[in-house]
Amino acid sequence: MDDDQLSATFAALADPTRRAILARLATGEATVGELAEPFNLSPPAISKHLKVLQQAGLIEQGRQAQWRPCRLRPEPLREVAIWMTQYRRFLGQSFDRLDDYLRALRTQQPGDHDTPQGEAQ
Amino acid sequence: MDDDQLSATFAALADPTRRAILARLATGEATVGELAEPFNLSPPAISKHLKVLQQAGLIEQGRQAQWRPCRLRPEPLREVAIWMTQYRRFLGQSFDRLDDYLRALRTQQPGDHDTPQGEAQ
DNA sequence: ATAGTAGTTTTCTATTTGGTTAATTAGCCA
DNA sequence: TGGCTAATTAACCAAATAGAAAACTACTAT
Image (tube, chains in turn yellow, red, blue, green):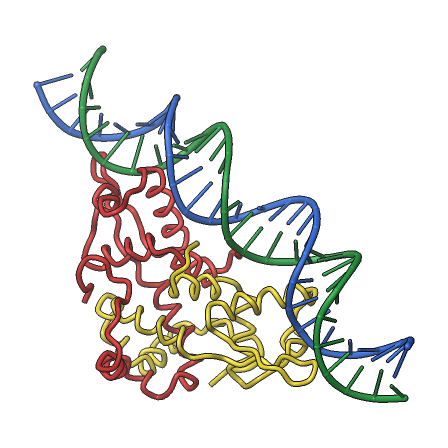
C-alpha cells in the first residue's frame, strides 16, 4: 500500500484477526499467547500480525521474562478519528455526537460490529 | 485481506490516492477524468482504484453519456464510525465530542490530515 | 547443564495489489 | 459512416501479504 501513517493504520485495520486483537487489548494488556488463544493460527502468524500492528503504532510490546505483554497505543486511532471528521458534514450532524448517533442507529439495525469477546466499552 | 465489509472498507482506505479521491468526492460528484486529474496515473490505474472503492461500497458510479459520475456513499464510513466507538473510552471522553476534541488537538499540533484540495468541510 | 516455555526469525509458497500498455466498449458529433 | 472522447477490460509484471514449518533466541526451572 503505502508508508504514510494513515495508510499503515488503515492497512493494519483491514484484517479481522488484527481488529479482534485490538478489541481484546482495549480490555487491557495481554501476552502474545493470550492474544493468540482465540485464533486457529500458528504462533508465527500471530507474531506477524502483531508486527503489523506495532509498525502502525497501534500497539507496543514490553518484556517481562519470556513474555511480551502488548498494549494499545491511542495515537493512530486518534488520527483515524481526525481523518473521519472531514466527512462529518457528509455523514450528517449526528456524527458530532457519535454517542447519540449510535443510539439512534442501533434502534433501527442491531448487527455485530466486530467486537469478538465482549464489548470493549 | 478479507471479504467482510469492514475489512474491505479499511483496505480501500489504506491508500492515499483512494483517500484523496474520497476527499474530492466529499465536495460533490465528479467524473472519472476529473478525479484522475490530480494524479500522475494512467486511466486504468484510476479505474482500478475506483473499483476498489466501489466494491467497498464507498462510492457509486452513474452514467451520463460517456461519463461515469461518481459520488460518495455514507454507509461504510458510518460503519467505521461505529467501529471506532468501541475505543471511545480508551481514546478519552473528548472523543464523544469530536468537534471539541479536534479544536483542542489542533491548537497543539497543526499537521496535514490528508485533505488534498481544500478542506472538505 | 539440560529441558521446557514464549516468541521471533527465516525460508518458502500462493495470492493479492498497484502499476503499466494495448485493446475494447460506449456514446457523441459531423 | 468515421473519428473523437471517456472509461473499462485484458494481459502482464513487480512487490507486498498471509500463511505454514523449521530453526533460533531468551528466559525459567530443575
